Image (tube, rainbow, N blue to C red):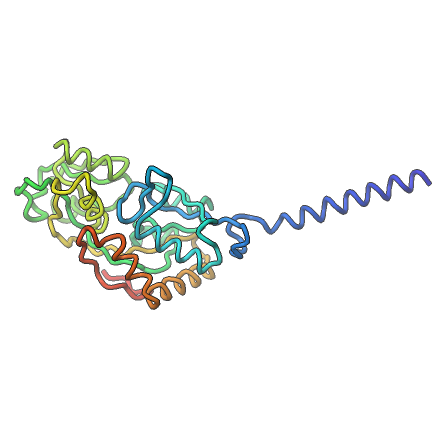
Length: 280
């Protein structure tokens, strides 16, 4: 009889353990999107004023952050349950493929090369490649003037490559780890120009510490369709994010985010693009 009691007790413990395991199996990050205490991890930039910036007090601001927050809410995650992580340009596809993030909203231009590795929802913003120069530099009046100039962009970005291959083959490319580093080099005259999307450049130029130091050249060299990157083949998530972006435009939240983040830079943005409309 004693043996029966021990066996019954052991069975009860085992059953309890199995029950606990089953309850915990649904707690995987980003799975249910119920907002009931579960977390979602989203990749953003943290050094791009106006788009994705981590402030000294640990908060995240910018247009991409606002878009990501809106989308996450539509997926069922409150702002407090969002885990924002930095994803540098060179690491974005890897972060998605490994499952480090649920999706990425980080000035992520949709192109054929990236579509081989990841899927995109959107686009949610149409930007244009431009050049930022020092305010007192009048030597760069066209893209061709970048020949023999020291041109900076970040590792993993397509911007500098576009210029060298199509517009200024003699440009001296300087690849830095982040746009902030490029900006420091521009200010110190270690480089002559910084190239990336006009939305990014406008954010930097509008910062209080940089006002009057730099200017946009005004070259619309390319069309950059910002999309939300996600794991390839996740059609359900793509559909949900597209629906969230469509709603963000229709209810006025998109326009508000543009005004809040780009207004101080007097950035003349394009109208909100239609979902699936990739401008070449």
